[in-house]
Length: 437
Image: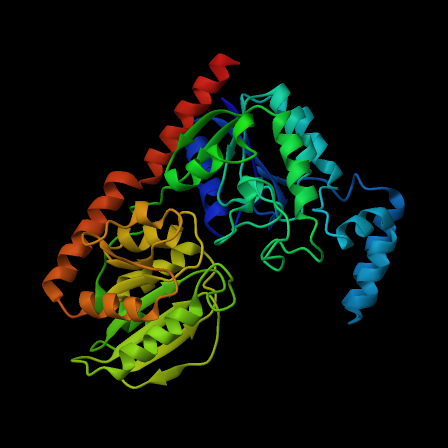
């Protein structure tokens, strides 16, 4: 079967890892799989960049080239002005708060899709995809759309936090600075534009969690969803597995006599969707208590200063590159924590469970579908630092309970989150869609 995957990139966070796993898995099973992306490092011949720049007007190309050169000499603001001078109407729309759909290379995908068995779309935000091409794509081939966040349902944001206006019509947005940010509030117009695009499309919608699927049913995407499926994300259980804790700590320079708690994410401290302030406050509570062993909290994903609170130390480690590089960190830890303000189905939670770590996490989004409270870890209310500290202490303070949770976490990962299981589920979906077509 010929499958065209579309994603913002072939490397990166959870959405990109899922797309990469599908590309590798489909190829290994003998299918003709390729990927079109917004950007790539160019190392994989199966992956090509959508030619948006090549399809822009000549004036826009020359302006972008000049702007890039000027910015490269340190004048970034001037470089941006030069670039925007090549497409003044486009940038005027962006300045007033319209979401930017002007990516003309997207329409080459419509031609390519006509020869594909299935087109599988992933993250469509990120400045590379013209959403207005969605109806045309769905007319020439079966289109599967996997939602990794709520962007297709809202007037601009990937996660809406407590706001429910996406369900009835975005307006007066309380989170304009949330990714993807807007300079002005045009959320009502953006929401209506997406609604019209979805109404003209026919899509097979996949979500990794039932929580997000239920949001789809209440959203502007519902009329487009000719089918809706829940397929949990999967990970490589051979790569992410329990290991020798002492050896892992020695390799990373971590103390052998401490309780080690791990948190990992892209941009742990500055990511609006994670909740680093609550983690810091919880660490202060933990450090103030008398402990049998010192506590080391390791935050992987963004560099920063090391700090101490009583018997607790917070050590910030920068981005580790390939997700496989996280394995040793998981194997060195006693517990994984995932404080979040909003999340869909975090891959790091699955990786930690596969490595035999109990998980203490905020009960937001699809996380309660991953973590079985009291069995594979504990769930706490979002933003509650005292509850987070108490849950961490409870798990670390009972070695037998922690060992049971660790074994249950690995068993749950094996039963539900094997990457081969995820690929098989998608293949079945593709074959059924192609047969109906």
